[in-house]
Image (cartoon, rainbow, N blue to C red; front, side, top):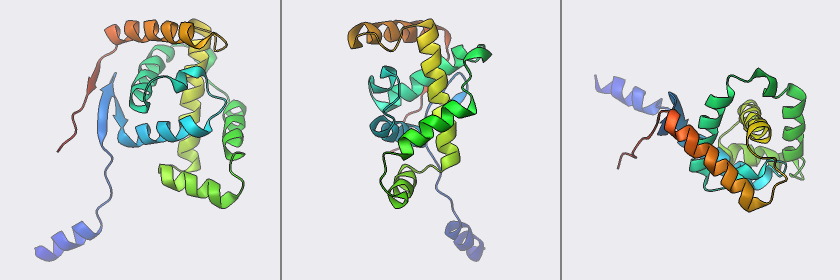
Length: 164
């Protein structure tokens, strides 16, 4: 019996932590870490992605994606996502620096592409329905804040407390 536990312990995988659930979608600690890492390297991102902290932005983007899910017209195409990926990759002088960044953020290229697709969807929704990205920072933040207050009223959301 003990040998089974020893083998199971040796093969244990790291389990991600759920920090919140928004409209049934779990928000993971790894999502928050990736958002924080992208803030520094995704220079083409809309101003929304510089508001507040990473955890708040991840939760807000989940609410916005829920609202935007009905709008097929703003779904980013593969070319837009690839262009953004190449822009980020271009900030690293060597392939090894790029690989190190991916490894440090805990995401592979496929996961990064998925995250960028979600970011672009949020940007397009905000640009179309809330505020153009070229607004001054304060009016932009106010417009986005108003949207998030409205979405919070109709989107089920709860934070999951950390286990001590």
